[in-house]
Length: 374
Image 1 (cartoon, rainbow, N blue to C red):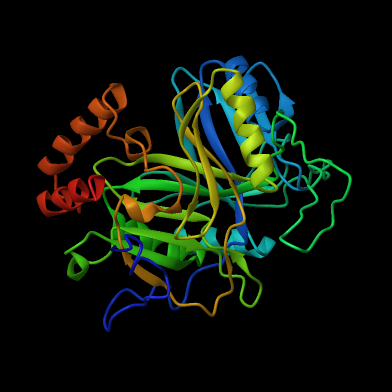
Image 2 (image 1 turned 120 degrees about the vertical axis):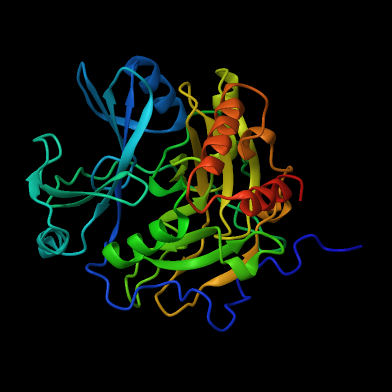
């Protein structure tokens, strides 16, 4: 029997002349994601889901909602009241306060103060896809909150739990922190190179359409360059597609029991699982994907890979079966092909993209269609 996961792992590296996965002299090297910003018309509904998902509210006003995890630092998610639901952009944390000024001078943009509720300063830049990207420094530090109590495991004959039961409670998981965001763009290569050159990010893994490796990758999983200090396998992922849009964001939880029991709590309250539970290949995370009431895809994850700056990018074909080592098959909802409003919107985006001069052409469309059935 053929292993569908053969040749999909990141140990397979680049061929001569392929993208190096890093810029030789980036303007700065950001330390991490700081937060993500959204607009939504109903903050009450957004907060209700957020609490069930595992966030804690750190600020609530008539027009703004700030959500945090248990780890110290800035909020994970900022939601402002708006006429429609939309993602407005990511914010990255500068590794050094001077980097904000350095980035502003290199790009011709201004350093501006953030709202008093956040503190600090930002330089706001447009990426090639039009997303507003913030690099921030000097923000208020929220104190740590109590973590979820870890279970005590018996592994085979290595016994540490005796005369005691294992009963994870069905309650909201405690989100620890923001892990990553995935963005789709019509200008994949230009957008990738922009993040590498301006923010100093480096690629952990490239994916390419089967049979189209010679045309270059269509997705990259990108991490922060912290030198010898390990960083998440990806803080940002960029994927080629027919529309410039948010794909999903991911939030770390303690372990598999917390992830699974928290998922049962969400199901009990009528929320919709998109895909999971399983374990990814690129990044190795345990994952569980959900749709919030506004249709945004959000992920609980745990046990992800950490790489230092010495590892070079892996290369693998993009396939639906290659998204997970184990777990249920990727759903039509997760892949964006479930019949309905979102699929119709994506179809219209495909037609529009094919009429314009960008990287998403007919060959790329054929590659994407192969991925959906692979």
